[in-house]
Image 1 (cartoon, rainbow over the protein chains, first blue to last red):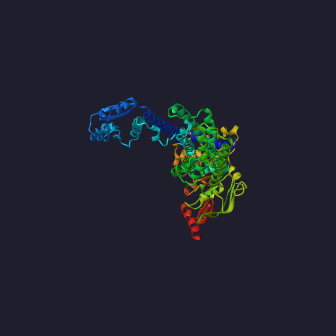
Image 2: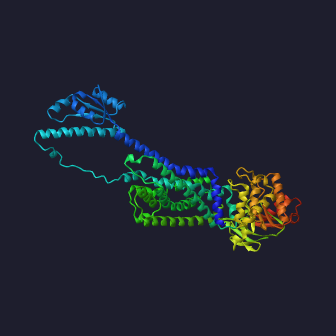
Image 3: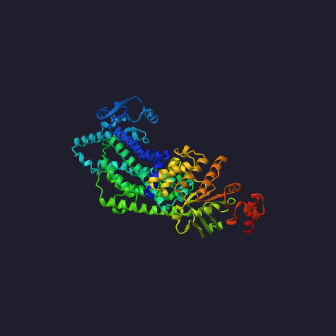
Length: 392
Length: 243
């Protein structure tokens, strides 16, 4: 076997036996993303469905002043509760959290109503509570609907076309397909995948430089009749191998998680079957070379495992920057963005989960530019490994 | 055979080695003796080509270390100061890894590994992971992997550091065995008695320079001191006075 192959196999064997490396490469790194993802999505799902489907809980004070309105509300999807309280204690009840939403109808309502003046009701709510404000929105819409219904009848009774009162009608055309709505949430997916790769290779990258120096195994290694570039390339390859293993685990976990979450209920559809897993791997894997060499470059300036660990934590944030920019500027895949590593992977992955066809040219540019940058960083890492001061 | 010719090496403003020349012939144990910071380790590092001398050069079996470092290293078995092992690998795997890296042929590799395990008498813990080994066990395994390719030249940088009496004795025996096999052994230490007990030739260095070369008896004679320790101190002060 070649010397290069010997180094690669030894590093893989050595690190496979190290519990810390294995936990980080095969468990924490790859599973962190899918678990957080599943938690966030199911939480969103729960909130969205409860607010939309549950009957609206509303308490009414002074129901006797507006029997028709109350009957109308009861016919809607509500859980109406009649309260016998004065307005002040109704406000207090909402403030204390005893009631969520209280509609106050005072005695003046009937008088105004009968002479066709604007009749008042008060809605008591706590706007800082997210779910209450959703309920309030529904309550306002119901009362509003009743109000325009009565208003239209009053106009008709006076021989006026009710549409005159509506000078403008807004029609909203929502272009988001179920999948694009999902993509908003899935935007963080690419970071999870990059993170799992970096976490998977982190310990190995540290071990290759600072770790070996700290253990005292570096100097004996350098007495071998093997060039330093062969040694470092072997270590880099082993790191890339671990990163890709983490990526595969993360992708499979993600595919299982996404398959189990009832995303259709959110009006979303996400494609993440075996075919997407393979494509995502091909798109993401070239980033492993960048990650491995970046971490190696960073750790070769450090003296101890601990120091290396704190620097790599920062280095792991670097790839998030292009993703953040892409998210904030809402970038769409285009040829020039494919040149930017981590951003190109992010954009391509986004299109992939949206179920859009990826352009082969875009993939080629993304893979090519990532490999070029990875090769460049590897070259830097080798130069650093060749320094005499590596041992000092 | 190792030949060192006028090597000098500075790290920044620190002159670690100013001018060191000596020869370590085959079939003899040559001791590099000097106080801490005298330049022993730097000299050793030049020999196993971890650092390149600013001037001068050294030869391992007629191979110039500055011209062909890879070939020089393949003729050498080196035990650097404070050598560490791969904790997750067994002693045997550590040795086998170095055997592969030295280019020992696949078909004879396991046999060679077993031979060196027998020679160093480490069978008892050869198949245990090296995590938690004692200093003595670690040193023996480090030595075994440096010798697995049966090099003609062996460099040992302060190998007895941290070893207890029994381990030190065992190591001395191994070093003598290597000499009796006709190898060139270069051994460094800052402990005079140790060098005197083991070495055929002694090279005393201080302040980055060679201050005296000879057998223990010759050094006693040259310095006019009967006691070896006094002779060592005398030799060192000579150099330090001159510098």
